[in-house]
Image 1 (cartoon, rainbow, N blue to C red):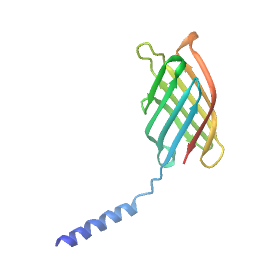
Image 2 (cartoon, one colour):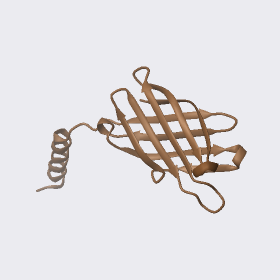
Image 3 (cartoon, rainbow, N blue to C red):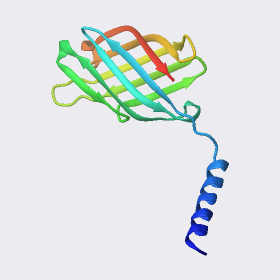
Image 4 (cartoon, one colour):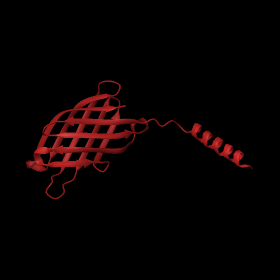
Length: 141
């Protein structure tokens, strides 16, 4: 087989495999809160039918407590995007003199890509835990 025929055969095989594969649409998830006492930003790719999140990166800042944490998939404990619900739960385990941090995001769809809801934040454990809550906005598109 000559070089151009082999190249044509390989290209044809690749095209047939690509055509036979199901489409894998992805979207980008973002959530943001930007306040004086609490800032949270996260972004991730949402996989086919919202079954997976990949490339998750973000940050959580608590200026009053002098805490700034980078977030990745290791801190994401739970997530789901189903029907009109989008929910996330992050947990940052205590290190050194920094406390455990637990963040729960609960939103409902307000449009094709817009989700609005609340966050619940717990800093520390037990009776001394500090709690905050507030509004949050997320988008998937």
